[in-house]
Length: 226
Image (cartoon, rainbow, N blue to C red; front, side, top):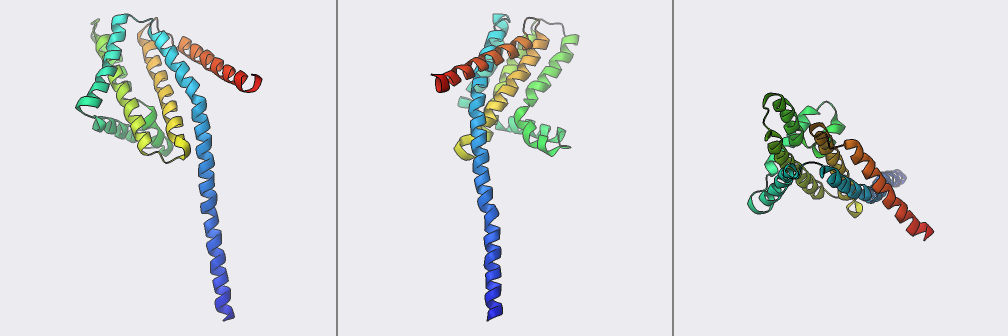
């Protein structure tokens, strides 16, 4: 009898010990989710400042060329909302990136969301064709495709993150998409900087940083010095 009771006590003790990591794990996930939520909120001023800075810098390009970019973006939205959801195209792009970064597993998880693969491929194609085909319309066609593929990447990255969202206070979505959006804006700014002399990626960074710091300064003054 004593042996049976001692075994029961040992089993109960083991069960309690095995339960503790689960509780700690759940608590740590909530804390990590809260941290990501706060970081996501902190990224929102950069989302705003980067967007405004991009629009201001993009404004130095000829209006007709700007229209090609926006036409590509609007076309993607119309196709997505009223005709067909090109999810399979986005998925194929993700698989390409998974193959490219197969040597490093952390990048396999992140790269498909961060890198607009089709926009990258199009830029490389434009870079090669610009030396072969000296047509003034070439850049217009590619600006349309840049807008289309960038919109494709952002829409389906947001949808993919949201569908997998299990974090606390929508932490993964706010932090993840804000970060993806900023990184993609940086990519397109680098491309435009290489294509157009008037477009300056340095000005984009400077203006984005100044606008974001101005927002943080205003919020800090209202909260603690107001």
